[in-house]
Image (cartoon, rainbow, N blue to C red; front, side, top):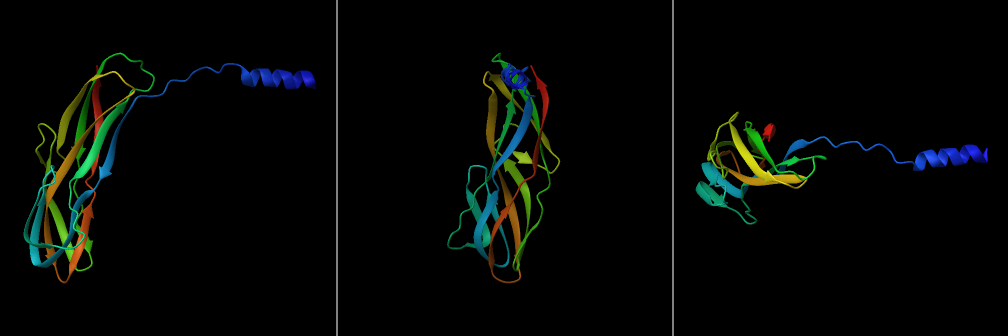
Length: 175
């Protein structure tokens, strides 16, 4: 009996074969597109740039107004591929932003813009290619911002409007 217990203990303490982590790409939404707290009488628009600048027409900022762009991080987890230099090419695809309704306010988001090189204007279904060069660490990533225009119609009152921006990522190549 003691011999069997020692044999089991020896087996459980024996080195186990290592398993490799699979390399993966990811997109992490950090902030939704925040149009802030506003009062609207009839219709109006609010535009937020990727840098966070805000311009209004027919919208009156309310107390607690905190508009800002959406923020994303796109990256590559190398898994167990060592520390050799990699260049990772991604394809980032933007989806349709759903309409927003809160209380007596309804709104649609259009004219998405980003601070990604080559993708200043974004259309639903639009894809943009980006590259992370010289990746030598396990996790390589790049962050970017997305702004847009909100067209608002109000039957009554105001709202604090926030909306997610659908984004997906695909790895095109790792060299």
